[in-house]
Length: 166
Ligand code: INI
Image (cartoon, rainbow, N blue to C red; front, side):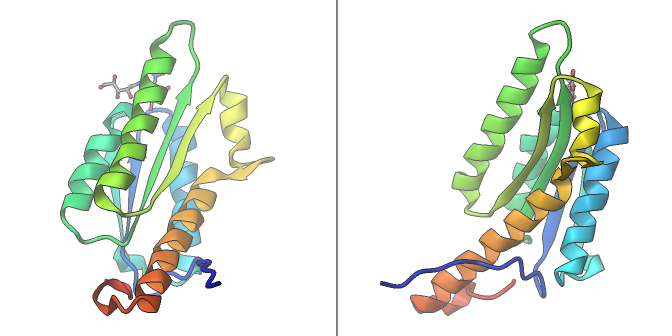
């Protein structure tokens, strides 16, 4: 039985990082982590575009616009939603997550999910280069692995057109 597993092989791949400016002390670290993961895994520096948007709410639209260009093999969406005293958190975090999940299906391009949803700033810091690692790095790696997986699948089934990096 054929089995497929991707590797985070970035050589020749084009990546778009879409990041929210809201809670920028956190999201800047997520972007650094994602960028570092891409470059260390072979993506050329000039093949990574970074789009900054106001907040997590804006992530799905910016990702959609980026993927419509058909330029990218993988996408990384980064943001930090921190729980406040009102239900606002639930709407922003929930809709941004849902939007990103739907876009993966729509475009067939992997979107690394680096949207932190935390109770407080301390939790976010732990996940942006602290005790729990850097979720920007993790989500970039996942997106590269998925792009590689689909390349292998296409190769195995003779769909060479899409097999390699764009
Ligand atoms: N955006 C975030 O990225 N994180 C948050 O914690 C947040 N909170 O808490 O409000 C947030 N709100 C802004 C929102 O994403 C939009 O940018 C804004 O509503 C304008 O459309």
